[in-house]
Structures are given as structure tokens and as C-alpha cells.
Image (cartoon, rainbow, N blue to C red; front, side, top):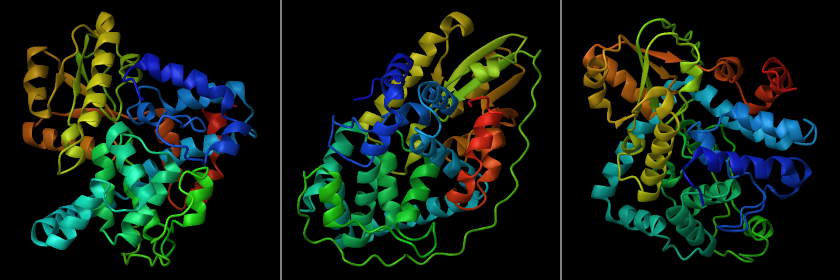
Length: 396
């Protein structure tokens, strides 16, 4: 479904942009099954890795539609931005998820009943027809419609009585667009921990309606969805200022899978520049990442290396432990990477700096610097700022 190239991303955007208005608002909630997701953009795997950016997408859509007509789609783009900003200001929530996930994985080793139920869910053997179909689609394609993700998470937590952390991890091991912020916080939302006390309950009537009758009756769904107990949200911490770097100094641009575009850094450089791509897809989960996800991310990295080779020469794809020696061989005096938001890439860059003594400057895009500070409360408070943000960004 998703060719891992910049060309494919642009083609998908060009095809969708004229339909981002009334057609999207009318059809966006309908999950018509694998290969039939015509009501949504299917851009998320590309945006997640910034093969194309939020600005690219918003710009293309707003050239073809008024803000009023495409408001629903614009909000969806900003939902992903909001989640990133919210988690960036509360990194402890990510750390708590990682700790609790490891604890739940340890339970799988000692509790046979839990392990059996978890395996049945992961293999689509629950006997709940839509859930098993979504499992098959996810493991085979690396994608699920957003509405199906909500239903899936609700069934996982409230009907199958499985730990939400294991479900979030299952998504991170398979989704091509799996993002630490959007994924973790969406699972917390379904289970009543994000909007405290408010859960999302999948119902047979809602599934029947929005799958267009593919699953007319889904017996056995839990009729109750009690919130999972959690601590109050930590107070947001101030965002750090973006790192400065010397435009004249020979530089290694270190890309990673949160941002695979060298241009936002390269355009500021006047001296010698080289580039490498750090891949650590395996850190998205303590368990094995799906072959589809690994292949997709590796394909994106190869596409970037090929497209930028004329400007930046050979662009190797390397692991974090190779970066220090690579920078020394190239005689680069500074390393600049795109900003890595809270998640595995930020963890890798931190570990690299601490273990090697390297100073890695992280360049944060203007879009993120403008939007993230508004993600201190709920999305609907954040949403009030969208028109002014679009004006500041020159999009309306």
C-alpha cells in the first residue's frame, strides 16, 4: 500500500488534496477495509518520518480548499502536532510507559493465561470477527484506519482485558506511522488516562455503521469501560530553546527516522556538509519489529540517500554506535541533527552524547517551535490557536 519514496508521498498528497474538504468530512470515519481507505489521506506514514512535512501537506490542501471547507482535515494534521507537543512537555509519561511496558512483558513470561490471551490477540485468534480482521490488516499492511485503531484499542483493553501497554506496543511494532506521542497518548485516551475518567467504548452498532455493514453484528463486546486508574498528569515543563550551530563549520547532518529531510539544516550551512542516516527502528519496542515496518523505514532511508547524493555525496545508513567514528573519518567538526522529539531517537541521541562525549546540535523546525508551546492543556484549547498558527506560517 505504501511505496517508501518521496515521489509516492507527493503523488498521494496530490491525489488527496482536492478531496480534503467536504468529501473528507463526509467519509473520514468509514473504515472500508484494507486497500479501500479512499475516504482518508493515507499520508501518515510519510508525515511521521517527515518524508513530507506537515507544512507541505497543509500548504497543498489549503491551495485547493478554503480553511472552512477542509477544517476537519486540518485539525487531524494538528492532532499529531498537539500530541507531540504535549508529550515533549511531559517526558515522564513516555518514561513511565517504557517502564510499565517492560513490567507487562515480564508478566507474559510468568502468567500463562495472560500470555495465551495476548498471543491470540496478536495472531487474530480471538473469535471477535472485526478485531481479528483488523489484526490481519495491521500485520499484513502496517496500516489501520484511525477509527479501527480506536475500536481495536477498546476491545483490547475492555473486552479482552489485556494491558493497554501491550496493545500500544503491538501497534508500535507494526504501524508504519507508529509515533511515540500519537500512539502512546491515544491508547491512554481510550483507556481513560489521558482525558482523566473518560474512556472510549467500541459498540456493535458503531462498528456496523462505520464499516459500511462489513461487520453487522459483533457479539461479546464489553458493555462497560471503566477508566484505568492513573496518576494525575505531570505539570508541563518549559520547552528548551533550539540549539544553535555554526554555519561555517564542516558539519555532519545526522538524520533519523523522526525527520529524514536534510534541507531544513542544509539550507543554513555555508561550509562543507556531509550526511548520514541513523536507523534504530528496533528501539521502537523491546520485542521484535515487524518485517514490513523495518522494510518500509529502510526503504525511506535509501530513497533519501539516493535523492540527495548529488548534493551530499554518499549517505550511509548507520547504527548509533558507528556515528562517532564516521564523523571523525569525515573530519566533521560538528554534528547537527533534526530535533528528535520524546521517543526512541531522542533516547539514542542522548545515549550517544553521554557515551561518546560528542556534542550533537538539534535543529528544531519553526513549525514545531510555534505549535508545541500551545499543547499545555487539552486539544480543544490548542485548536483555538490553529487559525493564528496558519497565518504565522504563511498558509492563509
